[in-house]
Image 1 (cartoon, rainbow, N blue to C red):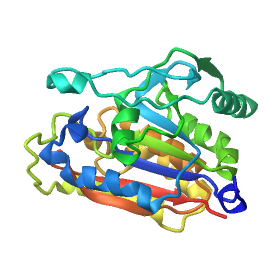
Image 2 (image 1 turned 120 degrees about the vertical axis):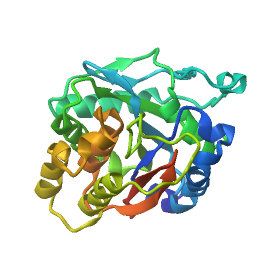
Image 3 (image 1 turned 90 degrees about the horizontal axis):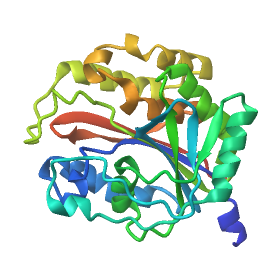
Length: 273
């Protein structure tokens, strides 16, 4: 590795990963998201490893995927046959998994390794669009099943040392996740209740707040306008809590458009020497 490469630091991104396998099947209601995902690597320097916090993995104790070559989990149903032959043959990274588990444990967060966990669609679907060559090692880390917002802010903060290295950390969720309100026909009808919530997320992530203020906003996220309309259950928002816990500065808004007929946002934090 040359000096220029060794000076590259961590990057953090939170985005909405869409509906199951629909983005890689070319679903029209995901067109804007697909374009964003395919172009996102142009905003990043290529990482040496990737860590994904997916909304689709919860454990009572935070688990770190530690296998050398995890399988694919088709954790969706009712889709065309080709949805069940999607591949993403990247490698795991056992050494990084061990490091992550130790960082969590050193911060008083109970953590365990999971050598058998496959990649779920919150990981391989967006990565298929971002890095189709599958040439970057990837590990997933679970959410805590307690769904406690402060726990997930602390998980992120415990991993800040990873930002010293060229690692891309992804919070893969959905900034709007009310399944009953999605429009699978992709009709982009303005939703004032969702707009209020998305606008507030943008303010909290992108304005000049100190860490305590930002943490307090996310700790009490369910007091934000229309929070429980946008997230009847918070598992798709909590990857953002992890990213906010990791961050040491303000985010840039990387995406603000419609997916499945609803406005959704993405945020990017850069740490480059």
